[in-house]
Length: 64
Image 1: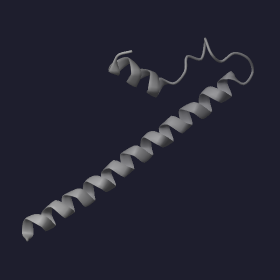
Image 2 (image 1 turned 120 degrees about the vertical axis):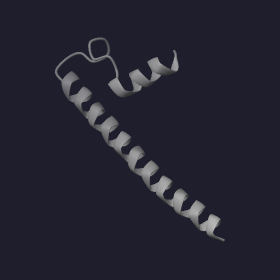
Image 3 (image 1 turned 180 degrees about the vertical axis):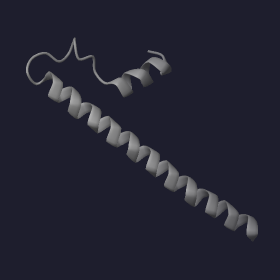
Image 4 (image 1 turned 30 degrees about the horizontal axis):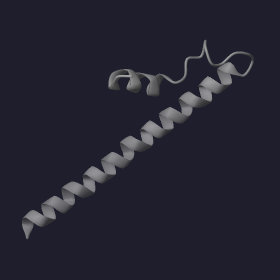
């Protein structure tokens, strides 16, 4: 699997027509999508926080 295909599979979730059948399929897919969105938001926020502290540390080191 290529990186682009793996990334697309990660963000789109499992194929609903193949894996999930029955009454709980929509609920499973919805909960999976909510989990991925929450996880992605957490990754973005963590990166922004890390980047903020990294830039402050670099500026502090350059001032010395």
